[in-house]
Image (cartoon, rainbow, N blue to C red; front, side, top):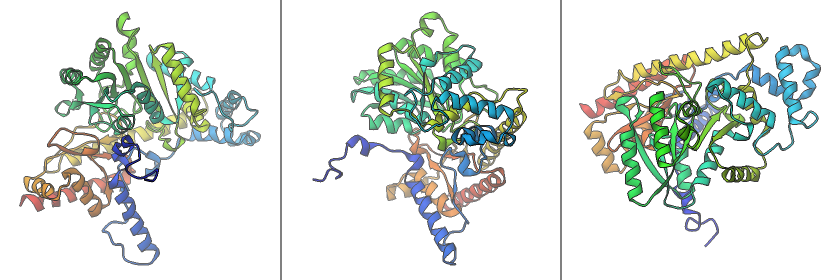
Length: 484
Protein backbone atom coordinates (compact mmCIF):
# COMPACT_ATOMS: atom_id res chain seq x y z
CA UNK A 1 0.00 0.00 0.00
CA UNK A 2 1.41 3.41 -1.00
CA UNK A 3 1.79 6.18 1.55
CA UNK A 4 -0.91 8.29 -0.10
CA UNK A 5 -3.45 5.61 -0.92
CA UNK A 6 -7.00 6.34 0.22
CA UNK A 7 -6.72 3.68 2.90
CA UNK A 8 -3.60 5.20 4.44
CA UNK A 9 -4.51 8.91 4.44
CA UNK A 10 -5.65 10.28 7.79
CA UNK A 11 -9.42 9.59 7.90
CA UNK A 12 -9.95 12.93 9.66
CA UNK A 13 -8.67 14.66 6.52
CA UNK A 14 -10.96 12.63 4.28
CA UNK A 15 -13.92 13.52 6.51
CA UNK A 16 -13.15 17.24 6.21
CA UNK A 17 -15.55 19.19 3.99
CA UNK A 18 -15.39 22.86 2.94
CA UNK A 19 -18.34 23.83 0.77
CA UNK A 20 -17.32 27.43 0.09
CA UNK A 21 -14.71 26.09 -2.32
CA UNK A 22 -16.35 22.71 -2.92
CA UNK A 23 -17.51 20.82 -5.99
CA UNK A 24 -19.93 23.53 -7.18
CA UNK A 25 -17.07 26.03 -7.35
CA UNK A 26 -14.91 23.50 -9.19
CA UNK A 27 -17.75 23.13 -11.70
CA UNK A 28 -17.92 26.93 -12.02
CA UNK A 29 -14.19 27.06 -12.71
CA UNK A 30 -14.56 24.47 -15.48
CA UNK A 31 -17.43 26.42 -17.03
CA UNK A 32 -15.40 29.63 -16.99
CA UNK A 33 -12.49 27.78 -18.57
CA UNK A 34 -14.73 26.45 -21.36
CA UNK A 35 -16.06 29.96 -22.06
CA UNK A 36 -12.54 31.41 -22.27
CA UNK A 37 -11.24 28.59 -24.48
CA UNK A 38 -14.18 28.98 -26.87
CA UNK A 39 -13.51 32.72 -27.07
CA UNK A 40 -9.81 32.17 -27.82
CA UNK A 41 -10.62 29.69 -30.59
CA UNK A 42 -13.29 31.93 -32.13
CA UNK A 43 -16.01 29.40 -31.35
CA UNK A 44 -19.52 30.02 -30.06
CA UNK A 45 -19.93 30.35 -26.31
CA UNK A 46 -21.31 26.99 -25.07
CA UNK A 47 -23.27 28.76 -22.29
CA UNK A 48 -25.99 31.45 -22.34
CA UNK A 49 -23.89 33.94 -20.32
CA UNK A 50 -20.61 35.77 -20.87
CA UNK A 51 -18.86 34.82 -17.62
CA UNK A 52 -19.34 33.13 -14.27
CA UNK A 53 -20.17 35.55 -11.45
CA UNK A 54 -18.65 34.21 -8.24
CA UNK A 55 -21.01 34.95 -5.36
CA UNK A 56 -19.77 31.98 -3.36
CA UNK A 57 -17.16 33.61 -1.15
CA UNK A 58 -16.45 36.80 0.79
CA UNK A 59 -13.56 37.91 -1.43
CA UNK A 60 -14.28 41.61 -2.11
CA UNK A 61 -11.42 42.57 -4.40
CA UNK A 62 -12.03 39.68 -6.82
CA UNK A 63 -15.40 41.43 -7.31
CA UNK A 64 -13.63 44.70 -8.16
CA UNK A 65 -13.87 46.38 -4.75
CA UNK A 66 -10.98 48.82 -4.85
CA UNK A 67 -8.37 48.67 -2.07
CA UNK A 68 -8.16 51.58 0.35
CA UNK A 69 -5.54 54.12 -0.69
CA UNK A 70 -4.08 54.83 2.77
CA UNK A 71 -2.86 51.31 3.69
CA UNK A 72 -1.62 50.60 0.17
CA UNK A 73 0.44 53.79 0.17
CA UNK A 74 2.01 52.95 3.52
CA UNK A 75 2.79 49.36 2.59
CA UNK A 76 4.33 50.52 -0.70
CA UNK A 77 6.78 52.67 1.24
CA UNK A 78 7.50 50.03 3.87
CA UNK A 79 8.20 47.41 1.22
CA UNK A 80 10.31 49.81 -0.86
CA UNK A 81 11.79 52.44 1.50
CA UNK A 82 13.47 54.22 -1.42
CA UNK A 83 10.08 55.86 -1.89
CA UNK A 84 10.87 57.97 1.17
CA UNK A 85 13.11 59.95 -1.18
CA UNK A 86 9.98 60.96 -3.14
CA UNK A 87 7.90 62.48 -0.37
CA UNK A 88 5.87 64.64 -2.76
CA UNK A 89 4.13 61.47 -3.95
CA UNK A 90 2.44 60.87 -0.58
CA UNK A 91 0.54 62.78 2.10
CA UNK A 92 2.60 63.73 5.15
CA UNK A 93 0.70 61.46 7.53
CA UNK A 94 1.36 58.49 5.22
CA UNK A 95 5.10 59.22 5.32
CA UNK A 96 5.03 59.52 9.12
CA UNK A 97 3.08 56.29 9.57
CA UNK A 98 5.33 54.39 7.14
CA UNK A 99 8.45 55.53 9.00
CA UNK A 100 6.99 54.32 12.30
CA UNK A 101 6.30 50.89 10.82
CA UNK A 102 9.79 50.68 9.32
CA UNK A 103 11.31 51.59 12.68
CA UNK A 104 9.05 49.06 14.42
CA UNK A 105 10.40 46.25 12.27
CA UNK A 106 13.90 46.93 13.57
CA UNK A 107 15.62 45.56 10.47
CA UNK A 108 17.29 48.69 9.09
CA UNK A 109 14.61 49.32 6.52
CA UNK A 110 13.46 45.84 5.50
CA UNK A 111 10.37 43.79 6.23
CA UNK A 112 12.02 40.60 5.05
CA UNK A 113 13.03 39.23 8.46
CA UNK A 114 11.10 37.02 10.88
CA UNK A 115 9.33 38.89 13.67
CA UNK A 116 8.29 37.90 17.16
CA UNK A 117 6.06 34.84 16.83
CA UNK A 118 3.13 36.75 18.34
CA UNK A 119 3.68 39.63 15.95
CA UNK A 120 5.62 42.90 16.10
CA UNK A 121 5.15 44.38 19.58
CA UNK A 122 4.40 47.89 18.27
CA UNK A 123 1.73 46.43 15.99
CA UNK A 124 0.15 44.63 18.93
CA UNK A 125 0.13 47.90 20.86
CA UNK A 126 -1.80 49.49 17.97
CA UNK A 127 -4.31 46.64 18.14
CA UNK A 128 -4.74 47.28 21.88
CA UNK A 129 -5.47 50.97 21.19
CA UNK A 130 -8.01 49.91 18.57
CA UNK A 131 -9.69 47.61 21.09
CA UNK A 132 -9.70 50.37 23.74
CA UNK A 133 -11.38 52.76 21.30
CA UNK A 134 -14.01 50.08 20.59
CA UNK A 135 -14.55 48.66 24.09
CA UNK A 136 -13.47 51.41 26.46
CA UNK A 137 -10.71 49.30 28.02
CA UNK A 138 -7.45 48.03 26.57
CA UNK A 139 -5.94 44.55 26.81
CA UNK A 140 -2.22 43.94 27.20
CA UNK A 141 -0.15 43.42 24.03
CA UNK A 142 0.67 40.05 25.60
CA UNK A 143 -3.00 39.12 25.09
CA UNK A 144 -2.73 39.54 21.31
CA UNK A 145 -1.47 37.09 18.68
CA UNK A 146 -1.22 38.37 15.09
CA UNK A 147 -2.01 35.58 12.62
CA UNK A 148 -2.29 34.86 8.88
CA UNK A 149 -5.94 35.90 8.75
CA UNK A 150 -8.47 34.87 11.39
CA UNK A 151 -8.64 31.29 10.07
CA UNK A 152 -5.14 30.39 11.24
CA UNK A 153 -5.91 31.54 14.78
CA UNK A 154 -9.26 29.75 14.85
CA UNK A 155 -7.64 26.49 13.77
CA UNK A 156 -4.86 26.87 16.35
CA UNK A 157 -7.36 27.32 19.18
CA UNK A 158 -9.61 24.46 18.05
CA UNK A 159 -6.56 22.19 17.75
CA UNK A 160 -5.60 23.04 21.34
CA UNK A 161 -9.11 22.45 22.66
CA UNK A 162 -9.62 19.08 20.96
CA UNK A 163 -7.47 16.26 22.31
CA UNK A 164 -9.98 13.41 22.29
CA UNK A 165 -12.81 12.22 19.98
CA UNK A 166 -15.28 12.98 22.77
CA UNK A 167 -14.18 16.60 23.11
CA UNK A 168 -17.01 18.68 21.70
CA UNK A 169 -17.29 22.16 20.20
CA UNK A 170 -20.69 23.82 20.00
CA UNK A 171 -21.17 25.61 16.68
CA UNK A 172 -24.13 27.54 15.26
CA UNK A 173 -26.12 26.04 12.44
CA UNK A 174 -25.95 27.48 9.85
CA UNK A 175 -22.19 28.05 10.34
CA UNK A 176 -19.07 29.03 8.45
CA UNK A 177 -17.70 25.62 7.38
CA UNK A 178 -14.19 26.39 8.64
CA UNK A 179 -15.52 25.26 12.02
CA UNK A 180 -17.00 21.94 10.97
CA UNK A 181 -13.99 21.26 8.75
CA UNK A 182 -11.52 21.98 11.56
CA UNK A 183 -13.42 19.90 14.11
CA UNK A 184 -13.36 16.98 11.67
CA UNK A 185 -9.68 17.54 10.88
CA UNK A 186 -8.70 17.54 14.56
CA UNK A 187 -10.87 14.54 15.40
CA UNK A 188 -13.32 16.30 17.70
CA UNK A 189 -17.10 16.11 18.15
CA UNK A 190 -19.30 18.69 16.47
CA UNK A 191 -22.28 19.83 18.55
CA UNK A 192 -24.84 21.76 16.53
CA UNK A 193 -27.03 24.44 18.06
CA UNK A 194 -29.61 25.81 15.64
CA UNK A 195 -30.17 29.52 15.09
CA UNK A 196 -33.83 30.60 15.00
CA UNK A 197 -34.64 31.65 11.43
CA UNK A 198 -38.11 32.85 12.48
CA UNK A 199 -36.48 35.37 14.83
CA UNK A 200 -33.86 36.80 12.47
CA UNK A 201 -31.42 33.97 13.16
CA UNK A 202 -31.15 34.74 16.87
CA UNK A 203 -29.51 32.36 19.36
CA UNK A 204 -32.21 30.53 21.34
CA UNK A 205 -30.66 29.72 24.71
CA UNK A 206 -33.35 27.16 25.58
CA UNK A 207 -32.31 25.21 22.50
CA UNK A 208 -28.61 25.73 23.33
CA UNK A 209 -29.06 24.28 26.81
CA UNK A 210 -31.00 21.31 25.48
CA UNK A 211 -28.29 20.50 22.94
CA UNK A 212 -25.62 20.84 25.61
CA UNK A 213 -27.39 18.41 27.94
CA UNK A 214 -27.88 15.91 25.12
CA UNK A 215 -24.15 16.04 24.35
CA UNK A 216 -23.21 15.52 28.00
CA UNK A 217 -25.55 12.53 28.21
CA UNK A 218 -23.58 10.98 25.33
CA UNK A 219 -20.35 11.36 27.30
CA UNK A 220 -19.14 14.42 25.39
CA UNK A 221 -16.94 16.93 27.22
CA UNK A 222 -17.98 20.30 25.84
CA UNK A 223 -14.86 22.46 25.49
CA UNK A 224 -15.85 25.42 23.34
CA UNK A 225 -18.80 27.53 22.21
CA UNK A 226 -18.48 29.29 18.83
CA UNK A 227 -20.43 32.45 18.13
CA UNK A 228 -20.18 34.26 14.77
CA UNK A 229 -21.29 37.87 15.17
CA UNK A 230 -22.25 39.36 12.73
CA UNK A 231 -23.35 36.04 11.35
CA UNK A 232 -21.95 34.08 8.45
CA UNK A 233 -23.89 32.94 6.42
CA UNK A 234 -26.98 34.36 8.11
CA UNK A 235 -26.20 38.07 8.53
CA UNK A 236 -27.69 38.49 12.01
CA UNK A 237 -26.28 40.86 14.65
CA UNK A 238 -26.67 39.79 18.26
CA UNK A 239 -28.26 42.02 20.87
CA UNK A 240 -26.33 42.75 24.06
CA UNK A 241 -28.95 40.82 26.04
CA UNK A 242 -28.47 37.73 23.87
CA UNK A 243 -24.70 38.05 24.29
CA UNK A 244 -25.02 38.25 28.07
CA UNK A 245 -27.07 35.04 28.04
CA UNK A 246 -24.34 33.31 26.02
CA UNK A 247 -21.62 34.53 28.39
CA UNK A 248 -23.63 33.39 31.43
CA UNK A 249 -24.03 29.97 29.82
CA UNK A 250 -20.28 29.69 29.20
CA UNK A 251 -19.59 30.80 32.78
CA UNK A 252 -22.01 28.24 34.19
CA UNK A 253 -20.68 25.35 32.08
CA UNK A 254 -16.99 26.43 32.18
CA UNK A 255 -16.79 26.55 28.38
CA UNK A 256 -14.37 28.66 26.34
CA UNK A 257 -16.22 31.25 24.25
CA UNK A 258 -14.83 31.70 20.73
CA UNK A 259 -16.09 35.00 19.31
CA UNK A 260 -15.71 35.24 15.54
CA UNK A 261 -16.09 38.99 14.99
CA UNK A 262 -14.47 39.45 11.60
CA UNK A 263 -17.53 41.28 10.17
CA UNK A 264 -17.75 43.85 12.97
CA UNK A 265 -17.51 46.79 10.52
CA UNK A 266 -20.26 45.38 8.27
CA UNK A 267 -23.42 46.65 9.95
CA UNK A 268 -26.52 47.56 7.91
CA UNK A 269 -29.43 47.40 10.36
CA UNK A 270 -30.52 49.07 13.59
CA UNK A 271 -28.58 46.81 15.98
CA UNK A 272 -25.02 48.10 16.44
CA UNK A 273 -22.07 45.77 16.76
CA UNK A 274 -20.90 45.19 20.33
CA UNK A 275 -17.92 42.98 21.03
CA UNK A 276 -18.19 40.03 23.39
CA UNK A 277 -15.20 41.46 25.23
CA UNK A 278 -17.02 44.71 25.93
CA UNK A 279 -20.09 42.85 27.18
CA UNK A 280 -17.96 40.54 29.33
CA UNK A 281 -16.22 43.54 30.95
CA UNK A 282 -19.64 44.94 31.94
CA UNK A 283 -20.67 41.85 33.90
CA UNK A 284 -20.22 40.96 37.57
CA UNK A 285 -16.71 40.21 38.78
CA UNK A 286 -16.98 36.43 39.05
CA UNK A 287 -18.09 36.26 35.41
CA UNK A 288 -15.80 38.84 33.83
CA UNK A 289 -12.76 37.48 35.65
CA UNK A 290 -13.29 33.82 34.81
CA UNK A 291 -14.94 33.26 31.41
CA UNK A 292 -12.29 32.18 28.91
CA UNK A 293 -12.88 34.35 25.83
CA UNK A 294 -10.95 34.36 22.57
CA UNK A 295 -11.95 36.97 19.98
CA UNK A 296 -10.98 36.91 16.29
CA UNK A 297 -10.46 39.76 13.81
CA UNK A 298 -9.43 39.85 10.14
CA UNK A 299 -8.45 42.44 7.53
CA UNK A 300 -10.22 40.30 4.91
CA UNK A 301 -13.71 41.64 5.65
CA UNK A 302 -15.12 44.95 6.86
CA UNK A 303 -14.63 47.73 4.31
CA UNK A 304 -10.96 46.84 3.74
CA UNK A 305 -11.39 43.48 1.97
CA UNK A 306 -7.67 42.62 2.02
CA UNK A 307 -8.16 38.85 1.82
CA UNK A 308 -4.92 38.16 -0.02
CA UNK A 309 -2.80 39.99 2.55
CA UNK A 310 -3.69 37.30 5.12
CA UNK A 311 -3.75 39.48 8.22
CA UNK A 312 -5.69 38.97 11.43
CA UNK A 313 -5.36 38.53 15.16
CA UNK A 314 -6.90 36.84 18.14
CA UNK A 315 -7.11 38.40 21.57
CA UNK A 316 -7.46 36.38 24.77
CA UNK A 317 -9.18 36.99 28.10
CA UNK A 318 -8.84 34.92 31.29
CA UNK A 319 -6.49 32.37 29.72
CA UNK A 320 -4.04 30.83 32.20
CA UNK A 321 -0.28 31.14 31.87
CA UNK A 322 0.29 27.51 30.87
CA UNK A 323 -2.23 27.72 28.02
CA UNK A 324 -0.64 31.00 26.90
CA UNK A 325 2.77 29.32 26.79
CA UNK A 326 1.33 26.56 24.61
CA UNK A 327 -0.22 29.12 22.26
CA UNK A 328 3.14 30.82 21.96
CA UNK A 329 4.82 27.47 21.32
CA UNK A 330 2.43 26.62 18.49
CA UNK A 331 2.80 30.12 17.01
CA UNK A 332 6.58 29.64 17.19
CA UNK A 333 6.44 26.50 15.05
CA UNK A 334 5.32 28.80 12.21
CA UNK A 335 8.08 31.27 13.19
CA UNK A 336 5.77 34.24 12.58
CA UNK A 337 2.80 35.30 10.51
CA UNK A 338 3.58 37.01 7.20
CA UNK A 339 4.92 40.50 7.79
CA UNK A 340 2.90 42.30 5.11
CA UNK A 341 -0.23 40.89 6.74
CA UNK A 342 1.00 42.17 10.09
CA UNK A 343 1.57 45.60 8.58
CA UNK A 344 -1.95 45.62 7.16
CA UNK A 345 -3.44 44.72 10.56
CA UNK A 346 -1.53 47.58 12.20
CA UNK A 347 -2.69 50.09 9.58
CA UNK A 348 -6.34 48.99 9.68
CA UNK A 349 -6.29 49.24 13.48
CA UNK A 350 -4.52 52.61 13.33
CA UNK A 351 -6.28 54.60 10.56
CA UNK A 352 -5.86 58.33 9.88
CA UNK A 353 -7.45 60.61 12.47
CA UNK A 354 -9.62 63.66 11.89
CA UNK A 355 -7.27 66.50 10.97
CA UNK A 356 -4.79 64.22 9.20
CA UNK A 357 -4.18 64.92 5.53
CA UNK A 358 -5.39 61.45 4.48
CA UNK A 359 -8.52 61.47 6.65
CA UNK A 360 -11.08 62.91 4.18
CA UNK A 361 -10.16 60.51 1.39
CA UNK A 362 -10.00 57.55 3.79
CA UNK A 363 -13.46 58.29 5.18
CA UNK A 364 -14.88 58.85 1.71
CA UNK A 365 -13.57 55.47 0.53
CA UNK A 366 -14.77 53.75 3.72
CA UNK A 367 -18.31 55.12 3.60
CA UNK A 368 -18.59 54.59 -0.15
CA UNK A 369 -17.86 50.88 0.29
CA UNK A 370 -20.09 50.40 3.35
CA UNK A 371 -23.02 52.33 1.85
CA UNK A 372 -22.73 50.36 -1.38
CA UNK A 373 -22.76 47.07 0.53
CA UNK A 374 -25.86 48.20 2.40
CA UNK A 375 -27.68 49.12 -0.81
CA UNK A 376 -26.75 45.80 -2.44
CA UNK A 377 -27.93 43.84 0.58
CA UNK A 378 -31.29 45.61 0.53
CA UNK A 379 -31.68 45.14 -3.22
CA UNK A 380 -31.04 41.41 -3.15
CA UNK A 381 -33.23 41.01 -0.05
CA UNK A 382 -36.09 42.77 -1.82
CA UNK A 383 -35.82 40.82 -5.08
CA UNK A 384 -35.40 37.42 -3.43
CA UNK A 385 -38.53 37.94 -1.34
CA UNK A 386 -40.48 38.65 -4.52
CA UNK A 387 -39.77 35.11 -5.72
CA UNK A 388 -42.41 32.42 -5.26
CA UNK A 389 -41.31 29.96 -2.56
CA UNK A 390 -38.34 32.04 -1.36
CA UNK A 391 -38.20 33.82 2.00
CA UNK A 392 -35.17 35.71 3.20
CA UNK A 393 -34.22 37.53 6.38
CA UNK A 394 -32.70 40.95 5.88
CA UNK A 395 -28.93 41.11 6.27
CA UNK A 396 -28.27 43.09 9.45
CA UNK A 397 -24.52 42.63 8.94
CA UNK A 398 -21.72 40.64 7.26
CA UNK A 399 -21.52 40.11 3.47
CA UNK A 400 -24.22 37.56 2.64
CA UNK A 401 -27.88 36.67 2.37
CA UNK A 402 -29.14 33.18 3.19
CA UNK A 403 -32.56 32.74 1.57
CA UNK A 404 -34.79 29.77 2.30
CA UNK A 405 -36.39 27.92 -0.62
CA UNK A 406 -39.57 25.87 -0.32
CA UNK A 407 -39.21 23.38 -3.15
CA UNK A 408 -42.20 21.75 -4.88
CA UNK A 409 -42.80 18.13 -3.85
CA UNK A 410 -42.30 17.04 -7.46
CA UNK A 411 -38.75 18.39 -7.38
CA UNK A 412 -37.98 16.84 -3.97
CA UNK A 413 -39.14 13.45 -5.27
CA UNK A 414 -36.96 13.82 -8.37
CA UNK A 415 -33.91 14.58 -6.20
CA UNK A 416 -34.59 11.51 -4.08
CA UNK A 417 -34.67 9.33 -7.19
CA UNK A 418 -31.37 10.82 -8.33
CA UNK A 419 -29.89 10.58 -4.83
CA UNK A 420 -28.97 14.27 -4.95
CA UNK A 421 -29.39 17.03 -2.41
CA UNK A 422 -32.16 19.40 -3.57
CA UNK A 423 -30.25 22.58 -2.72
CA UNK A 424 -27.06 21.37 -4.43
CA UNK A 425 -28.88 20.45 -7.62
CA UNK A 426 -30.78 23.75 -7.59
CA UNK A 427 -27.55 25.73 -7.24
CA UNK A 428 -25.94 23.69 -10.02
CA UNK A 429 -28.88 24.41 -12.31
CA UNK A 430 -28.62 28.11 -11.46
CA UNK A 431 -24.91 28.06 -12.30
CA UNK A 432 -25.43 26.37 -15.67
CA UNK A 433 -28.46 28.50 -16.55
CA UNK A 434 -27.38 32.02 -15.62
CA UNK A 435 -23.71 31.73 -14.58
CA UNK A 436 -24.19 32.77 -10.94
CA UNK A 437 -22.20 30.68 -8.48
CA UNK A 438 -23.68 30.46 -4.98
CA UNK A 439 -23.23 27.92 -2.18
CA UNK A 440 -25.96 25.42 -1.22
CA UNK A 441 -27.21 25.69 2.34
CA UNK A 442 -26.26 22.10 3.08
CA UNK A 443 -22.64 23.27 3.04
CA UNK A 444 -23.32 25.42 6.10
CA UNK A 445 -25.80 23.17 7.86
CA UNK A 446 -29.57 23.65 8.04
CA UNK A 447 -32.54 22.08 9.75
CA UNK A 448 -33.80 18.83 8.24
CA UNK A 449 -36.12 19.29 5.27
CA UNK A 450 -35.24 22.95 4.85
CA UNK A 451 -33.18 24.29 1.96
CA UNK A 452 -31.17 27.47 1.50
CA UNK A 453 -28.30 29.00 -0.45
CA UNK A 454 -25.75 31.64 0.49
CA UNK A 455 -25.09 34.52 -1.86
CA UNK A 456 -22.38 37.14 -1.33
CA UNK A 457 -23.42 40.77 -1.89
CA UNK A 458 -20.01 41.71 -3.32
CA UNK A 459 -20.40 42.14 -7.12
CA UNK A 460 -20.38 45.81 -8.21
CA UNK A 461 -23.64 47.74 -8.02
CA UNK A 462 -23.82 47.97 -11.80
CA UNK A 463 -23.88 44.16 -11.88
CA UNK A 464 -25.91 43.28 -8.79
CA UNK A 465 -29.22 44.48 -10.28
CA UNK A 466 -28.67 42.25 -13.31
CA UNK A 467 -27.74 39.31 -11.06
CA UNK A 468 -30.90 39.79 -9.02
CA UNK A 469 -33.07 39.89 -12.15
CA UNK A 470 -31.36 36.77 -13.52
CA UNK A 471 -31.93 34.85 -10.30
CA UNK A 472 -35.60 35.88 -10.23
CA UNK A 473 -36.05 34.85 -13.88
CA UNK A 474 -34.28 31.54 -13.30
CA UNK A 475 -36.31 30.77 -10.19
CA UNK A 476 -39.62 31.68 -11.86
CA UNK A 477 -38.82 29.29 -14.70
CA UNK A 478 -37.74 26.61 -12.24
CA UNK A 479 -40.98 26.85 -10.25
CA UNK A 480 -43.02 26.81 -13.45
CA UNK A 481 -41.37 23.53 -14.47
CA UNK A 482 -42.33 21.81 -11.22
CA UNK A 483 -45.57 23.46 -10.17
CA UNK A 484 -47.56 23.37 -13.36
